[in-house]
Image (cartoon, rainbow, N blue to C red; front, side, top):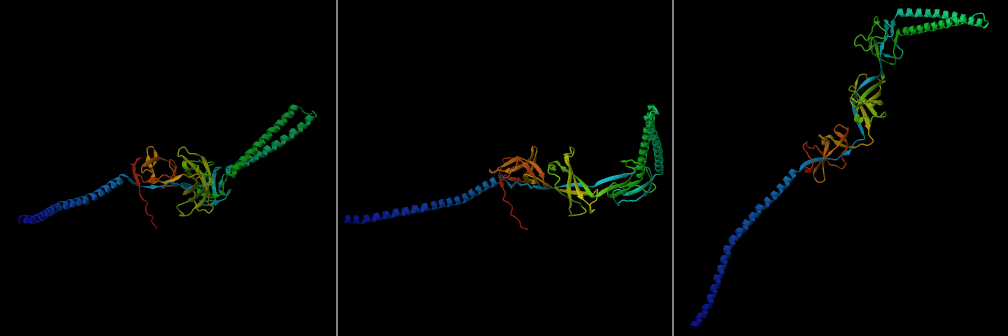
Length: 410
């Protein structure tokens, strides 16, 4: 009986032990599940907080690096134009002008041309009454006749004495005396003739004439005024100038070309004039001549420009703009003036290198086009020149090139 009961109770005990063990294991798993879940949740929250911070830190680093690099815009050098229009101020002058003075003293009896009158060469402008001069001319002519008569008599006498000398009728001494007297009378006749010619010229000056075709721009005398031969040229008051005549069918304009452009001005340079009273109108002209030397004071070349004014549109003394179309055989590079830096060591440009850093180059300026200038040396066509650089820019700075602005369509 006991053995049977012991065998019957033994399996029951094993089953209970297994159940207890299972329950213990389950209990342990339940106890561990909570902390594991909390740990996983904490790890997830930690990852969720760190990753954005890492991204933000990286973005901040990129932003700081971008802020350290200077954002610039660049321009590429382009070939300078082969032609340049050089505008210079000029004063319109008559092709020829003359101040007319009296060459004979007397009283003005009549004048024939007033200001604005167009006269021809040789036309009489005025007449001077000089009766004393006319009397001197008549006296000189009478003296000439006397001298002519004396010479004729002396010449005949000398010829007769020379004939008689051949027959030994007279002496050689007497013959020489007669010949010498003839020669003296001949000299006196020549003197009288010269005096007549001088007085005749002075009498001809009683008519004041125009030296060339032109316009009378001044009349400073009236009928009855006493005029003096020669006057006082250059005096500010009572200069003695009777008339002022200017040739206006052709005009001269003098301009001073800067030294940098002087070599490009040649006789066949295209040129035209503009004046304020004719907006938009161009007057064709030609380069007549140049001084061929630089003025050491102004460092300019004096150039004469001639313009046809037969239509009379331009007036002498007017202000005009002279437009010279200069050509150069070897144009250099062109840059906007906004890219230039003026440093103590000369004109400088900042260039963006391939390594993203700046470099400074000293350049030399050639022609000036206003908003653009020609760079003759110190720059390559492949350089990326920084436009509008700051005055404090230095070599070796980090730069980033701004994208070009989108093109706008009008």
